[in-house]
Amino acid sequence: MEEHCIFCKIVAKKIPAKIAYEDEHVLAFHDLHPQSPVHVLVIPKEHLTSLAHSTDAHIELLGRCLRAAAKLAAELGVAEKGYRTVINTGNDGGQSVHHLHVHLLAGRQHGWPPG
Ligand code: AMP
Image (tube, rainbow, N blue to C red):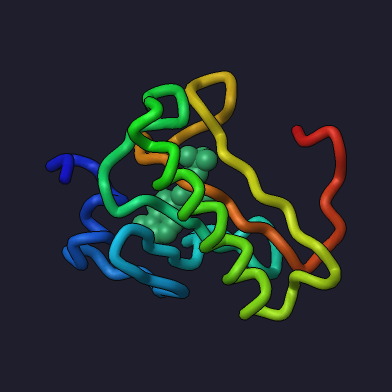
């Protein structure tokens, strides 16, 4: 737990979030400012600043986040039509919250290349 990390505070239930999925290692909650009809963030409960900060010790945890996103997409009924998963990393990647998160975006056609 990082004291000033907003997502660690959500994990600790110190600030509210609309939780979509939770297990021992992973938490998913609806984005406060959704960019698509479905916009959920999947995070490791353990603080990990970004993908760039990951090591081989995180391989299983990263897999858990992606599997949680896939399971959630199925549960939310968007798997068949498709969805976008995004991990923004660092300044050029557009990362604004420095606790790794997978965006799960669905419910509309997503363009390519992204902005
Ligand atoms: P990124 O720009 O990739 O770091 O994404 C951070 C995301 O976190 C943005 O889509 C924000 O809308 C979202 N966000 C920030 N604070 C909260 C919060 N308290 N609860 C839910 N989503 C949040």
